Image 1: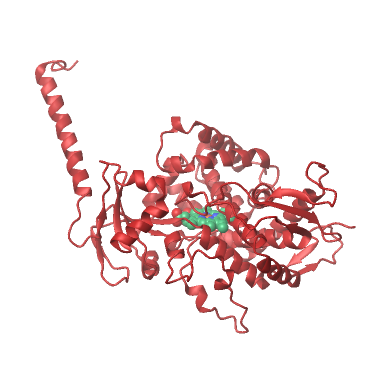
Image 2: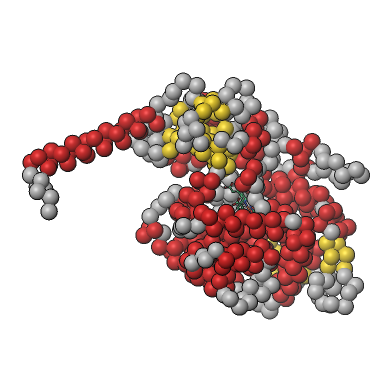
Length: 500
Ligand code: HEM
């Protein structure tokens, strides 16, 4: 036992140590909250350590708007012990994504460890990245999109012919919700397309929803004992995923090449059950939680804008043919390349609902030149952040930015295949640079197929033009979901998916 324990000297040493630590922490905090020469304006807030967290937490989008008005497009905030320099100038976007001195790697591991509890996976994760190509190379993309279409046709047919008198009125209209029905159809088809057959999609949907509800808290580093529901739900899905992934037999029947490839790599590199389950859970989360709200807003905006609805319906009719083959499914063939207005509707819905923040950490004390005129200084360890929402709502880039106008993205096909200027405007729902979403083409194909099949195979109607609000409590975490739902009615058109 320490002979000094309990003695007055020990107490003095102990209190000196506490004072020493406290004053070093205070010096660090004061240093963090001080603006140095060449640095952007600093919004330090008034609460020690938390800084601006109380105001940022209330409404982040508005807080950042106000800071931009007061300090200009580049400013640093002090948020929960961290310095974050926001770059809300669209001019800076290309240089931001190209710059190699600000990187995502450390943040990625923070998120994997805190939010997803995936630990000790640095090397493993590097090896797994090789499989991202299977999400977007043309051949696998075509195969996955075709399988998704086939599954979705079956889902739509069953949804419209289920014999539930509570849902069906005397004219055959079924009352549903764009979120509770249509988005859920995408979830089921997406799950089977990526992860294969034999999963209990009801249980997985419920658990993923429970996890996702607490995701912002998990990402902010909230201790696990305060996230009990989320962690239990995550563990159930991870257990299912790890069993299938590490199974030496073939329990990944009809899974995508992407997931099969990951399974081989996980086995080869000796992933534990926990690691494999949690890593595959991250893929489920990435694949579903953005695609669902993206599909919701795309369909909801179209349904509530009658002139867009009829223009999209006519474009779809010209892009769909009925299969003459004797195999029962899929019955319809959609040419996804000839839907430029539907493409534009997706882009516009993503523009309006995207809240993702592209986060990078500065590897150095340095002057950053992001082609905005003057450079600005950041410190080693500072976050540098681009906010998709603020770029998407900049009136210099998107005139009348709060207005839903898909035609701002509409590029009629050109004979020589050249792209119009619209395609060079910053549009960041899928991130950018090394973190550009590898599932972006699949997601677009899935949303296009969902909307095309619904609008072609069903009669549809809504009785309101009011959309539910965006759930701002999830600001920073991708495409914002709605608060509530949009009711819509649907009825199978005769002879399209099934015989009369
Ligand atoms: C509309 C739907 C989608 C949107 C808006 C979206 C958006 C994004 C964004 C913004 C990122 C970058 C995150 C960051 O910088 O921190 C990302 C990453 C990712 N997305 Fe998507 N995503 C969508 C659909 C999908 C789908 C269907 C998949 C299929 C598996 C997918 C797989 C991934 C993966 C694996 C990553 C991580 C990439 C990496 O580690 O570099 N996403 N997504």
